[in-house]
Amino acid sequence: MTTTILITCKINYEKILAREIALYNVDFLTKGRGWILAQWEKQTLTKQYDTPLTNSCFAYHLLENPADVRAASVNSLTESLVNLFITHIGETRIVEPWKFLFTSSGNEQLIHHAKSVKKRWLNKMAKRLSHVTRLSQEGIPYGSKFTEGFFVQFIDFNHVFVSFRALSTGQQRMQMDSQAPSRSYLKTEEAFRMFGHEPRANETVIDLGAAPGGWSYSALKRGAIVTAIDNGPLKDPVKSHRNISHLKVDGIKYIYELSKPADWLLCDILEKPDIILNLLHKWVSQKWCRRFIVNIKIGREDPIGLIKKIRDPQKGILPHCKLLYIRQLYHNREEITLMGQTKENTPIMPF
View (cartoon, helix red, strand yellow):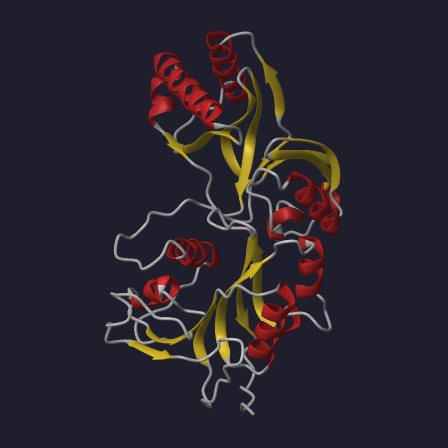
């Protein structure tokens, strides 16, 4: 069975996403601003996932078999969306909460327009299906399975794609903490949420390239014991925290010398991708850490080539990992984030 899918992404990454989906034997059809259309053969999938794109780095939302809806005005578009929903549910009795989402990859005007249409749609739905509307919940759950609901992606002011099944790969805008030393804190918060794991009280964390302390702060507020590795200075409240140790050395050259692996490796260093990949490879191959969150600045590097290196079955990071996720976070710019758990083997002693 051939399935068509609308995949959203960060604006200006459409071509990269189109190249990435080829790694999963998914065929590219067309693209627009912040989205592409693709298709794949469903019979090739495993039972564990609804889509081979669950492991995609650059995908955000996935809308299955989207309907192309166009209208001449806001009112007619809203009415079309209400009728589409009512036709879809037919005689089905809705008794459980259901999900919906109106999104746009366009400019601020289009984003505002999508919110306006959503409000009109909810008002009309409340008048015609009040009980059903009260059970509605905004958003798409993060996971490997598609969620049933009503999902609208705005392509233009009077042009949308509508799907009744959608999946989120987990990117989400996070709330800033006023005490965090830098906005890089948002990346760790998003990564912990997406990874499904976070440092716990008294777990040990090594933070390479820690200054001014945004990532360390994220671990400290969870009760972890942090060793910050950076020649640069830390800012308060990190530098004066009772659970922080600051080693003023180069994070690239730092050698872990304890016999027991650290519970976490955090790393956000402005360096070439190959240097960071070699650094991470050393940490995971030597079993110096149990879990890791590592940022890689892609810059002018080919991101698809990087993904292939990371997943290389012989020389990459993947062979050393029990879990490995590669994602472009909402808070990433020209970078990607690796989240993983090393294999549970006996740690190799450091040099």
